[in-house]
Length: 498
Ligand code: FB9
Image (cartoon, rainbow, N blue to C red; front, side):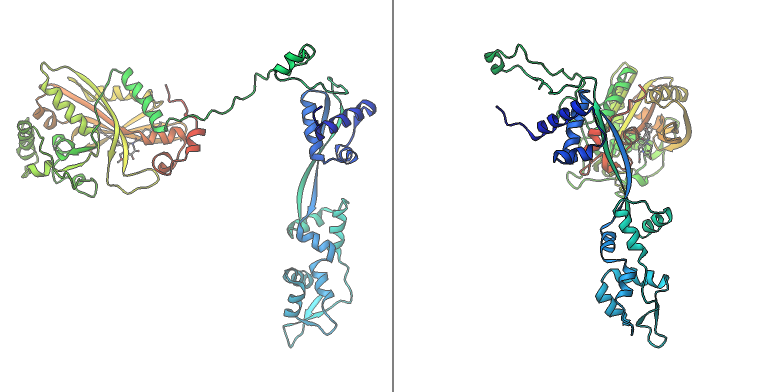
């Protein structure tokens, strides 16, 4: 017969007692009558209450308990009383008293002085003198009364709290009575039919524990989608639903030509120096630029054309051949638009890209030297700024951003350009969402796109929306070696405004 667990004895003891006495007014004294700890009895009460075999009512009492320091004073007297007791009639030096009282010395001196129990010799400030024969150590008295659970006046409690000698302790105990399912001996409910039960046949009169259909399953150790990838997928779905096709972004290394020159960004533009852009040492330059198109780009930079007067400077091929880490996926848009221009007859297109770009920027709470650039573009005849605003409203409203504002902006490759702002209800402020514009003819026509074909485009980051949607305020918690996995595991993605 299995060894009966102490809990079973406690249970048997309690049920037997209730069976005869109907109630247990104070679980503390009942535990000591059983010779078990109150904590152990609490465990049994919790389980019996769960099966409504007993009914337990909590009794909560907050009591002031003495700190270790106070227990010392209750035993040996208050520091001020100890101090006076240590001063002989002729007085004592501070060092002598400090040696005797240890940490109680400072507190004792202050309190004894406050109580005018001590004074100092006029001539020698170091000599402490008694000013009273004996003292009534009220503090010790009050501490002892508290120790015995006696009540003390509130002003005393406030004084003891101020001297950090007492702390509040909540003690909970229970009064018990029979529950609606009271039994003298609880059937141990079987939780499984075992071969033993089947062989012995005693399964017939076994009572089975109810299935707890509400029980939480074992947390399964599974992988988690990086929040950036979760938001990336949601934004991709929006693009795809709007009829956009993804551009191939599988080249972090790009030539200055596609990243800047083809975008009609002049070679002396500040973004093109190593303060903003990571240039490659090896391979430092590219040899694969389309010569005829390159010639057109050179022309439009140097002397314009297509109604533009260009930048009128000496455009250098070797500057365009410099390799770098792309600073925006607009470099991919340039390649795709050039490729589209070679496909005759022209067919309108909607393209998007979401991938990493690199900028030699100071790293701070919201900026790393790389981020994920999200770009959308539509290339078609007769597109206007209105079309751009319209598609931005569609796109951003799917991201839960409906209240938009557009602020004129400048990009070397778009005219007109607009910064996009959205009012974020959660943050209760206008948030800069991104940038947009209509690609300049100086960019599109050298590619060979037909007259009248316009390209509207916009860009934003993946990190900002992800930080806002996940409530992450430091980008290092989201991306990189210091990612906080618990945050990823625990932070449910609040549904994008889909
Ligand atoms: O992502 C940005 N902000 C943002 C986006 C979404 C969002 O969603 C919330 C759920 C509600 C919240 C905020 N920004 C763009 C704005 C700022 O964060 C800005 O400070 C940082 N920008 C990056 C560039 O930093 C140097 C974000 C990044 C950005 C900016 C512009 C473009 C792309 C990315 C572009 C472009 C463009 C323009 C014309 C034609 C083609 C592309």
